Length: 102
Image 1 (cartoon, rainbow, N blue to C red):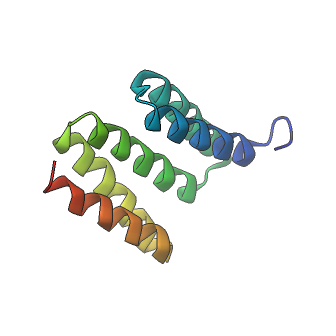
Image 2 (cartoon, rainbow, N blue to C red):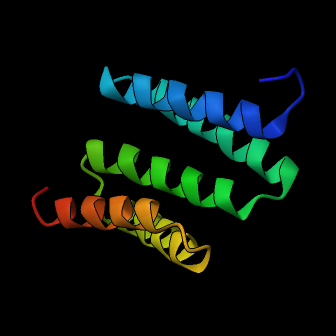
């Protein structure tokens, strides 16, 4: 990503969030998720907002915070559906289904 490119920054922080989440680094994952959200906000991107909500939902789910996870994942699903982001909406539905198993 170019220096100062908010969407590129958001994308990079989402990747770093997922890496941290996969290794159990919840605090680091939250930091990267927040930075991704802020980058998306600077650009005014609804897409980035939905992706940030999804990432936060995954963090909360991994931490066992099912109520918070549900709220974030529902928000992400609503955004994805409104933007016709069908693949992302399907991912959000799958994550919501995992809530019943948590």
